Image 1 (spheres, rainbow, N blue to C red):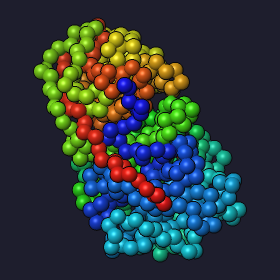
Image 2 (image 1 turned 135 degrees about the vertical axis):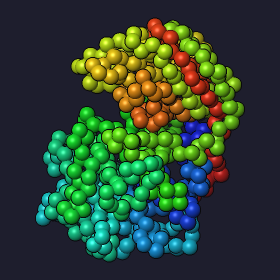
Image 3 (image 1 turned 90 degrees about the vertical axis):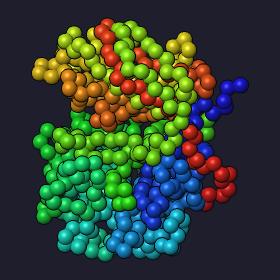
Image 4 (image 1 turned 120 degrees about the horizontal axis):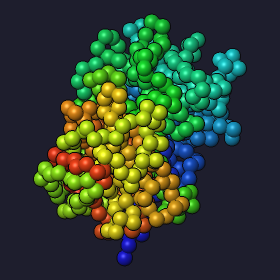
Length: 543
Ligand code: DQQ
């Protein structure tokens, strides 16, 4: 008999039931990773928001704890929205979060500290009795319904803490800056750290330094010539996240995006699929910066209510500055590889135009697949039209079924035997004016026979030179998730899919090439993924 819950994940984080959204306050404390997240204890749709809490030693297997932060003061009576943790000197974690104070969703910023620092699980949190610390007023010109999501704070050489809060004035999105000496009395700076016209409300901003050499992360309070800074905003209007790379001038307390780095709808994204309200933290034990993000459903609200849950967390990604210094690179944390089993490797081989090979020996619904290609003859590539500026549009017009010379080639995930259903993750290569253009797509249009799902196709341009570099793709397949990394993490696309046939033992995995020219598979490695221990114990009263 078919499984009653075919879309529940095997190794992506999700609670047993109900709605989840943004990751909150991620940190490492005494060797334990903490994930808090927006959670509705009462149902599978957004509402009644509290901070649920889980801890882990590997960011993959998680132990649930009682809710950490929930309405208990006038300053958060109507909800405990997103926020961040900062580790104060002396290894003292502190949380800033947004409290909702009335039915109109007026927003203020609150503080909470662990009750007992000797508990590595930080199970109990105490709110500052004088909350809120920051509130909207006429004088400070903050709109009370657009004032939320404090970041991790950073400390200047002047011993003053800084934090930014997402906001907007009319259509201008902004990162409001506050300063404090003691983390309790905060003063709004005259200028925002940064703003951009016509971007609407900036939710869940994130601001952090990245090293200009290598993949190591650095602490939030690192400045100087060896780092660049990154500013990310989650745009409420489009539910897409954009980031820029730039320079932080600490004297002016302002951020200047590099030329060519645009913070508007044409800018860089962490993920070109479904991925939102993300947040990074510095893992000082492993010297890396880790990115967490929420992957929402693409199913209908009625289906979410029927299945009793909605929302998952993406696999945590290590994040660093690319050698070009023009973009970030992301890769699933190395700990994920412990979940791998049943390794299958295919010999290097040519994949003729219009052909497909099945990858057997792994469980196609719960797998990790890495494939890399080499293109024997690039000369035949279709000519790129410079008016093609929108990769998502290009991927939807030139989906998996539209062949060109070089591509589509890639993977067919969660495919039914007769290919009535599949999700295609693939590349197409075009000949541009002075270089080749690589397009990466995740085509969900045939992912399910159920048309109630949002089956939008996603796409990104991939900054890889197919003349000198191999073209690689890694996809993390997990029942209703296909999370893909192109070019070693230069473009990422997370997708949600809900097959009706390609579930459980009836799903298949293929490598394919529907272009007219042959491509060479250099490597294909696939693994089944072990089920992670996430909420396996019976959860009694979480509160
Ligand atoms: N989710 C939270 C807000 C945030 C939004 C509420 C982003 O704090 O702006 O659940 O998804």
